[in-house]
Structure formats: C-alpha cells, structure tokens
Image (cartoon, rainbow, N blue to C red; front, side):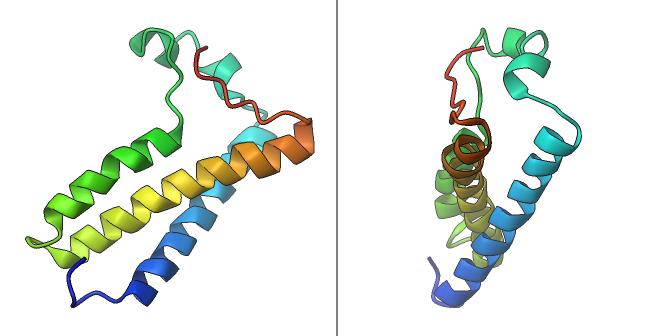
Length: 112
C-alpha cells in the first residue's frame, strides 16, 4: 500500500464498509425475508450454473484490483481494498455469527 494512505484510514474504511454491508444484508434477510438460496436460485443460480456466489468472493476478487491500482491511484486503491475487505468480513460475520446464532445454521451453501 502506498505511503500516502495510512493503515488507520484503511482500518476505519474497512470497518465502515463491513458495518454498512452487514446492515444491508441483515435488513434484506430479516426485514424483507429474502433468502439467497430460495429467492435467487432461478435467476442468479442459472447465470452461475448453480454455483452460489457469496459477496465474500467478490471482496476477494477486489483485492488484486486494489493491489494493481496501488501505484496508479493510492486513494482508489484504498477504497477498493477497504470495500473488498468489507465485503469479505460482512459475509463471514453474516454466515458464521448472525445466521448461526439466529437460525442455528451458517447457511454457507456452495451451490443452489
């Protein structure tokens, strides 16, 4: 990571993205009673050939993008890195903390 961006800024941006994304996920899941496996299998599931795409996968895919941008645009690199980490941590928190406590299962399905 470029020296012009502090690790503290990255940490706070990552925490902010994690909280925002998890709030959206919880609202969609419990406020609107949406379940990814049930509600997107016939649409997204067809596009992904039955593989379930968790938002943590997208977060992991953003990490090399952030590294590539690091020398070209440190500010954007930090934002993309924080977003990628936020997506990853939000998904882990959602499945292995929130869902496990509320439903008794992490519901981390790999296929629809």
